[in-house]
Image (cartoon, rainbow over all chains, first blue to last red; front, side, top):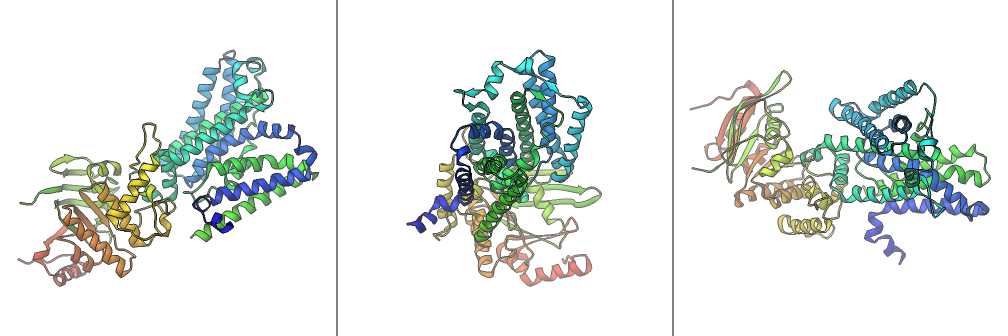
Length: 326
Length: 255
């Protein structure tokens, strides 16, 4: 019985997804039995649902770039510059959502386009190119904002767009979490079953082969960076609605948690293989660690330590799965 | 008079200051296998990349089915009916077989989403009818990683037959294969003629080339320096020509 389950087609083709799900279940069981008083009540879950989408949306999108065998380190600063733009426009236009949203996301896509062009047309390795743009966009935020924040309480609080982005559905479920789940579903679908997702896999697997099969390698890469720019902007806008405030360092804490979620989720840094579902679970793991650890009664000093442990264990399991296959 | 499929006229290709192809003129007829031979750096790979649309020539004309064409991309050459089979770069290892068969030519709905069922069904047909895979270990959902070199070549051939290509471009198709597998690949090449398909074939091994091709074109430093029909030259003479070329840099063309 057990061995027939283990050898079934579904299990064989979904080893990564199954492993990450088990890791997540074990972790939440530890939370549950270690801090029953916290985890039998709803508020902790609401807190998770409130905070996870901000980096989760970016992690889902970054899964495409990582599957290409590329990396983008500049998204924290793209969040910064697009949030600043959104805040300035919303206050400058007395709350015109459409103009602010359109221009902020367009800027995000432009920043992604710059990354994509640097990588494909100029030929700079993405890790280097995006370190450059990471500093560039953050620098621009500092120059424009002169270190001060922007409050959007007057323009955003109580508006219909605020409701759509971050209000609580039935007074319980944060809207951003529903958006996050819906986007995950959509992106998983695109990743596995759309031509673009298919091309992402082939380019990440073997660039030369993909080109020989008639796939426009440069265009696929550029679109991947552009969509990450768009979703970085979107994540920034979500954060703005939640906080009703822009601050000049906005986004800069997102880098490690976001990339950790992608890698813990099982997407290969070598490219060609990955899973959006895994990234989603990775977000649940990484996003719950801090509160989970504190709820367990450990001091906050353990957070990084256990974070590191989780990442190392997860990627070790994937490496072993990969080794067994080869 | 044989029917002409592909004709290159006065093709020049430079990379920066390096002249890789100099005034190349070649013709490939329908149902003909043409071998391109020459030393490393002779321009063989560049020439076939011009044919498959990876590189565009700096000047010169290309005629396909007697119409002048410009081949600007791989997907364009594939649409015209030119298909490349590469030893090293034929397939992507971590992706499933059926996805490899349709990569770059996906069957999709109007929103660009893949018709997975249709692709898998067609891929099954290709495995069975065009390639003759009977092994249960290989299915359309297998990752390419688990296939042997010859099996990979088989899939690439099956793909080209399925998409009904007129000209198949083979870049070192037997490199790194075992003797048995090489035999299979060469049989594929010979089988193309029965289907009235044409092929252009690069291989370092003159014995392979001689067995499979109808005509030999010798390239040296970007120029065509010799052209022989199989009837005109024995295997030993062809080897002799290549040795001459290697030693003197010139082919003695005897009357």
